[in-house]
Image 1: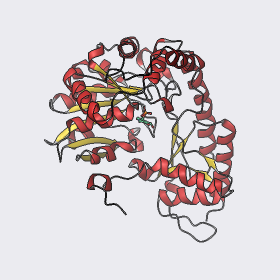
Image 2: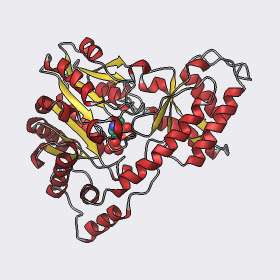
Image 3: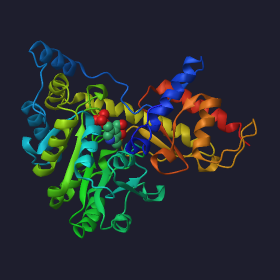
Image 4: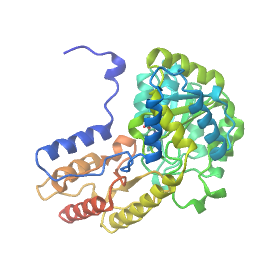
Length: 405
Ligand code: PLP
């Protein structure tokens, strides 16, 4: 086989992709599998967005665009940032990318020198540490336990920063826990950052609209770090995209907004690494941002119903527990009480990875182990699927757990 570079050998395929593949394989073998791994909305992209893509194709929007994205799209993003987040980034401080994922990777690739550290609160989105590793950086994971609401505290941040720290990555609402920072919590982190002026901040805002219990937040919406701490503007890169908000995961449009010099570095990197993101998708994304926003509230209402029902079902199972996530579309289930228990076939569940494998093999329920997100013993269960599927999954988990000794 072909020898691959060290930078690829030190990373691994996304564990949620591997779990989904294993579930599909079992399905092909004829097993009935409830897939609660998926990290994408189960809704269709709203019709008016699809129609805008059709019009763009008809009108000949089928060529290279400027690398940073069409001016139309960057204006739509700037308007969105102003309207929804109170931010004032102009089109020249914004770059459209092939999904938020590409924006995050490019930002790391454009800034990290070998050995530079990136502070990543855990549990984290699985891709952050591997992206840092692929860019020769050092991921510094900071454990944020459930008692802390899975959130980074000022003391935790302070202890993690060294003279090698280049970035801190904040993801609110968080995948996998749904933890969502308040303005006061952001202020606390900003006070620490004030003492470390060379540290850059990346905010991954991809789930910003998928927030429940709006009354918890001042002004009724989850705040942005830069609204709470505007003094961080000249060293913060705000990452977002249309994937989760508008059920547009396949269209691959995300963006980064931040200081011009940093955005220009991403532009240079991507001009050689990838090129502009799909011209037709850009037109669709502009239509999503500029158009009717009804879909957002409707889909969040559906997620909320599923969240409440599924969390109640999980909490009724002895040995499992989960809080109500404040945002995103996952439950992060504590399975600590199952560790050390025995399966009917005499296998001991020693880790959350064992729990997840056992649930897949015996109950036919696919979830992802907390270890993948940097915090054990938990598993992540996606609620981006129908209530019937969720009910079936919870019932299967309950039956399997009842058989443990
Ligand atoms: N950030 C987080 C926290 C995510 O969960 C995901 C998708 O799973 C992304 C970024 C990537 O989004 P995109 O589809 O825009 O690349």
